[in-house]
Length: 97
Image (cartoon, rainbow, N blue to C red; front, side, top):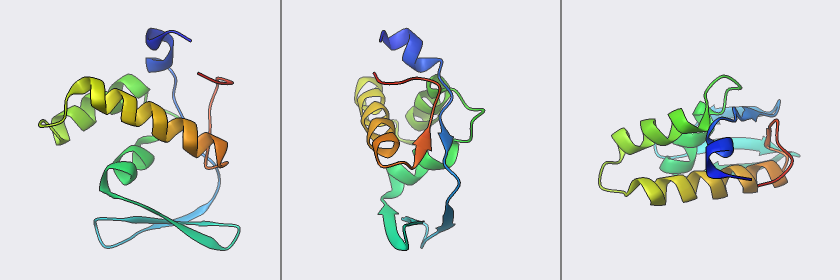
């Protein structure tokens, strides 16, 4: 899949029980076992609402973390979304990238 196509997808969280942690983490209950995200993973997760395009998530994260290069942010988001999809935490309108 081309990067341009990936940027236009809108990932959506699977129906799970989740809550904000201490401000630095996000806790998700998966099969009764909690999954904790670090601050940047939580930043991405909270935007996977089925309405926000990945390109917007990249831009938002670039504003929030200006010291991180946009290409690094893009790869981090791509890897997070792929891992979360494989774990059943996200669903999307693409099969694989």
